[in-house]
Image 1 (cartoon, rainbow, N blue to C red):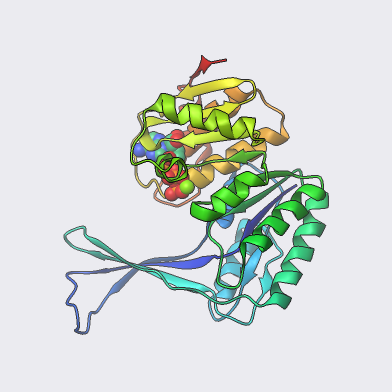
Image 2 (cartoon, rainbow, N blue to C red):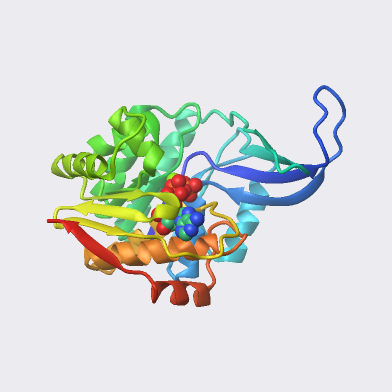
Length: 310
Ligand SMILES: Nc1ncnc2c1ncn2[C@@H]1O[C@H](COP(=O)(O)OP(=O)(O)OP(=O)(O)O)[C@@H](O)[C@H]1O
Ligand SMILES: [Mg+2]
């Protein structure tokens, strides 16, 4: 079984209007409204791969039932902790010109009692899970020490630990030596404290992280593919040329793929090949974090990776 943890989920609302008039009334049309959050996306993809997955994190307020219904429909076991605060709604407003304006809500503050309940839930689920993924940002009220404690709880339960986060929490995650991190190019630049770096410099830095104890570093490079660095060497694969509909959730799809491959104990080259193929298949649908099996099979047969360093 897999467990995904989403500490700061959000309902994603996509609206359209002809043109924004700042300071006036704007009438909008709704394009879609869907539960979002990195761990939830990872869980959705795992279901597409027919895996048994439990999702946890914090949920509260009027939008919580929309999430609970999504978990029921997707057959994701729902162990979210109910909180007194309200889960966020993030709004993306599209104009006819194609311009997109985002409104990101700050989100609820999590209390100590709610955090303690989540910690217990993670402890319990980790004992039954092969992999626990801890993805995304953290809400107000959750400190660095809590994030560390959650990672340790997952590890002590005997599960592999996968984290996909950014900024300061990524640094915290690295110091806890997870089995996998999946920074994209800009997250890697932030870690390295650089504006730009050649691929060789990126892999050199990733090797350093591996020597510090991170088992696998998967650096995703968007349409340029990805590189996997681990104790057995460095592999690189190009992304296949596909008809792209939406790249939302591509990174989360990679995390799901790698987690499942980890359970299957696959060779690093095959882990990378599958992760690239599955994430590219996600780009072929408008839906975030959903893959059509036919797309995946077709893309997988065209994907290959090569070892670029020992
Ligand atoms: N345009 C594309 N064509 C084909 N594959 C793509 C494209 N964009 C992304 N991918 C695939 O998805 C993977 C992850 O993409 P990316 O590096 O953008 O992740 P990310 O920035 O972490 O995404 P997320 O928004 O989900 O966090 C890439 O390594 C690649 O395999
Ligand atoms: Mg990402």
